Amino acid sequence: MCGLSRRIKKALAFVVTIPAFAQTGSVVISQVYGGGGNTGAPLRADFIELFNRGGNSVDLTGWTVQYASASGITWDGTVLSGIIQPGQYYLVQESLGTVGAPMPLPDAVGGINLSATSGKIALVAGTLQLSGNAPSGAQVIDFVGYGSATAAEGTPAPSLNNVTAILRHLNGCTDTTTTPPISLRAGQPLAIVRQLSTDVLCH
Image (cartoon, rainbow, N blue to C red):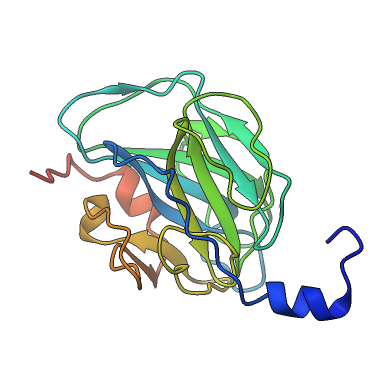
């Protein structure tokens, strides 16, 4: 952390920034899984899933999903393309391993190595790389912190492991910023089931 003393590092470890920037939009981060390909993993790749909880289609072309470590200030991104219809999911495959079942056909492919336990994910309307612990701006459409993340909407979602994912309640329909966050929970990763599902109606 750029030469900070051990004492300051210890203090910062308990600080969680609550961003006020994430927009209440129709497309949300509905699932995050970082244990793909690890020992005991049910699926072979890390992934980020998006969900359109609104009533209109959204063109994701030129948007990105971006990741930083739990206390990180540098971000890595995957560029998206295509249209996500109302009630549909959008699967972004990230780092690929060798353990677990093959992934269903993704909508976008990147190479980000997500942490299996803690991290930060942002959905960004653009390709500009984010920076800082809790980046702000109207381009940040949704934001999820999990585990020991130092930034989140409300309190970070639970820590994960090789067999659990962050799941948004009501199949992705819930989007609140309460503390603790009632929108997110830990559970079995559902990439294959979700990709084969019919439209989910939130309204």
